[in-house]
Amino acid sequence: SALRWGPALPWHFRAARRRWPTWPGIWPVFHRAVFILGLGAQVKAHNERRLGVKWEKPVEKMREVILALRHFWDCWQNGTRLNFRGEFFKLTLMTPFFNPGPHDYPHVPIYLAGVNARMCQLAGELCEGLHVHPLHTVRTLREVTLPNIEHGLALSGRRRSDMELSSSIFVIPTDDPVQAQRCEAETRQQIAFYASTPAYRVVFDVHGWSQTAEQLSALAARGRWAEMPALIGDDILAEFVLRGTWAELPGLVKAKYGGLLDRVSYYFPFGPGQNDQGWQATLAGFNDA
Image 1: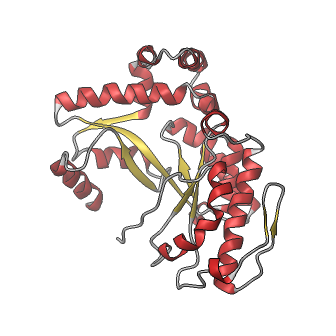
Image 2: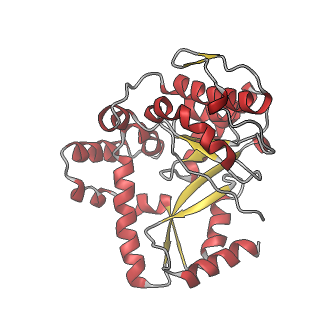
Image 3: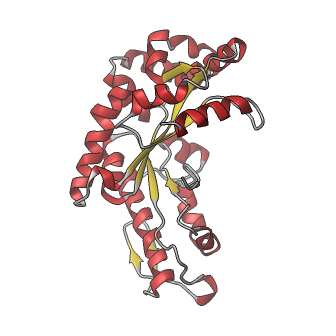
């Protein structure tokens, strides 16, 4: 089917302040109904300590970002007056110089990144999709993500079929044992890094791994990154990772995520031009279904 593209999580609250004026230049990119806009709030530490942005009411603020974007698009497409007034943003000025005017594909799907309950609810209420964090399991999808999506959908009178769930999923292609070993080590490290983030604690809490998550957070706070992967045992790794040959992976993905996710992408270390035959085998596997 047709290729669709878009950034996964380009948006955070610092960008919202700085990039409103640049949207007229991006508007023409939203063409032929192939673009998906991904938004994400990031976590408190990165907002405050890496981006220099005050962390305040992230769900409420993200709601305003979504509504304000659609207000811009309505202004450009239909000539309505720009008059958005919220708790965090006041947007009332639109001059001809910054107005790109209408085009044939004004409806831009928004996929929101969410882990915890309220952000998932917001996605269900306002968005066309949820970008599920790679640090997820089938159990957290069923017990945390989907119930909160359904709650949000009910608020807006929509159904599950009205939105999509997308995620990157950890995979380890096993065709080459050396590459598979390297991939496993890097995946274990990545899971340990994600699990050290307090905002993602719910994933480990559901499985009874709270103590492990606390230990990872303590090591991260001390900068002892090299020690963290050892805390991700094989039992934990197995909950997050699919292993198989390139040709086998599509079937494994469908068996694990059928009825849960609508879009997937592989999460593992790779570079352009590497494993081209493997990619062809995995694409053939998905297309044959």
